[in-house]
Image (cartoon, rainbow, N blue to C red; front, top):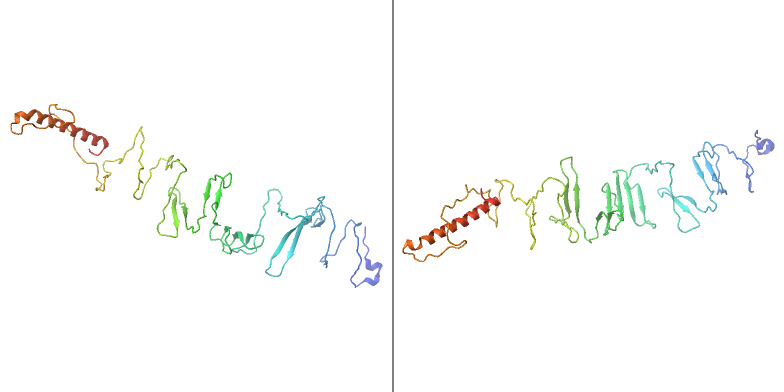
Length: 342
């Protein structure tokens, strides 16, 4: 169908703007074409219950650049774009007849939803309370950092910076804070201590150290109830202690009953007791051979009845020498068995 110019029917309109103070109804027209760069002034309202109530695109409603879908039977929600003065930003606000209404951003298929700044900054994306008084989440695209918690106006100072004073400050587990796998408690009023875990290259180990605002700080490891603490229970390497070990009162060292435990695995390793200088295994040379004829009472050193005539006490003297040698051999053999003598 060919077009007819309105000014060709009404020649007096040529050179003038067409204006009307009455409603213009194009509802019967399949489409309305406006010239390029047409400017529409004043408040505009489009009433429609169509899935393509307002569509803008190169192919019309086919894959448009922008589309408003008002086809829901009881559609009463929408989006308001609120413009502000320079540096005041722009608001995207949900419109609804209800009290609480969500806002969803949905990509097509498995496509990404990307939020990207025009210029990197230390406070590109911020989540805050409804009244705007408190920040809870902030991203720093300049330094690739994220901040979580009540941090005021501070910029993130770590790749993941968590500010919290809660007993469940950081919790990881299948049931949240109920019996979590990992929990950080930062509820102490003047909390200033913590743990630092530092990785290294392969075969260089992992370092776990205490963080503190003080000079000296303790580290406490506790199992729960009557539970035990196992160190290196599955690895085959040893355990190295770099400082003295203190065992509190009424606490014992319990050893195995099958293979047992060695204290010192080589004769040149040094050992001592009660503050004596540690020494290597002492050398005795050989086990004592007791050639004295056995006699006397086991574990008894008899008294001498006659200190003048040897013959009267000779048997007692011999028996005492035997008993002393017998006991000395027992002690020597025992020290040798324990490894304290060679």
